[in-house]
Length: 534
Ligand code: PEP
Ligand code: MG
Image 1 (cartoon, rainbow, N blue to C red):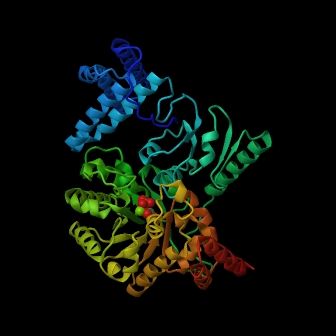
Image 2: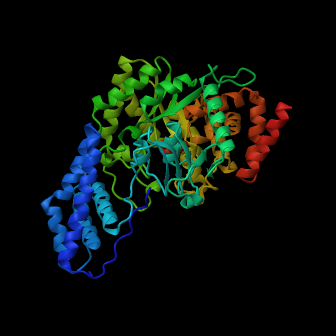
Image 3: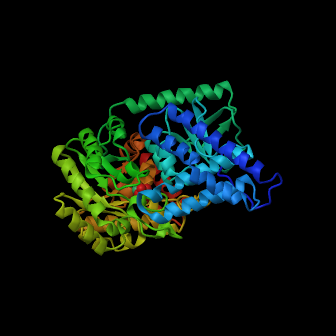
């Protein structure tokens, strides 16, 4: 996937205004024709979006904007850049639905400039055959809309293992290696093995390596198809194992892989592309689909978690310099309370028609007061169980107060690690610090586990840490009572838990928590666990 085009320099044209105008017009026409070619193969909203983009390029006002800028003697590249940027700013300033179209103008400008420069247009390519997508970075919205018949695997230079792109890939069982700095060496058309387990990309593998991979894929598919028992420790202590989902379409597979319920339904993933707040009936349809697949079982739904790499245009959060620390999660919802109330009402309606053991939780809660606010709204909506995600160190350290206000907690180790280590989860360069094995993170988990035990509140983990079989044992040893993960990880975690008793888990957890850093914590836990199995 070609990288975005750099901003064209403002240099004088060498060929004159009229020749530049002809270049700009022909590049715009070429892009419009390409958009129409792709639109012809699609229907519904996808068709309409591409058709609308083609129309924008042909709009007389857009063409006049380019022509006007050429009067100052610049190149076609610069004139297109400036004209589209001016329109983009205009739309962005109007807010609401119209502001949501601003990014379309950036995309179009990028495409026209790529044609003018004779380079590949940025964005997900459509070569017409299955391929491995290699990108500098992928936005969650790009990943959510990838066509899985076309994209066999993804490899990105940027991104950490808990970035939402990686999470979405995991949920779609899409093989992915992220944070692979050397991916820039890969060239179009070569054959690669993308080994997500090992975090490696093998170039030009020989026939033996390809045969070994095919055999491993077949074995994993057969193992996944085996029926599974509920999660429990060797001494019989139950540890329910749940699935993380962002789309009800994944529910059937999760059930087949032995998910005992849903521990985290990321509702914002349904609406990453939406310009307007989803209607109650639109939401209700998605929730009913999910509840049908998990009839009568525990389903934990998280209300919209907007912010950082998951902006939701309709919540009206303004641009922030530091969005990971900004108006996100429950903070953003609180400022858009009608959206939150609608969501709770849609959940109540869906649960009335398709009963499940429904639990609703709020993201990014930092204080007990926020927890009380949310719980009151959940109860007002007639819903039975209100919880909070513990992802902010402040909430973990004051867990007794926070948990007193609600019925349960679920620890989001992805954000909890990011905020504890001050290491951006989207940044490959900080991936080493983004490690939930760090004893600082484990101690915060223990705070929450202790508070849960003292108050009789269940404490789950739904961050990616729950999917690591040894770390799952540590989390249980720290007082965590259920684990939720992408469904493909359930079998490994189930097998790991079955090998230890509750007191083994506590001992392994103590060894890890006393360590100096993440690597030594992992090694200490592995040593203790090996001792148990001997
Ligand atoms: C987390 O932060 O661990 C979590 C589960 O939420 P998300 O990954 O969606 O931020
Ligand atoms: Mg989170």
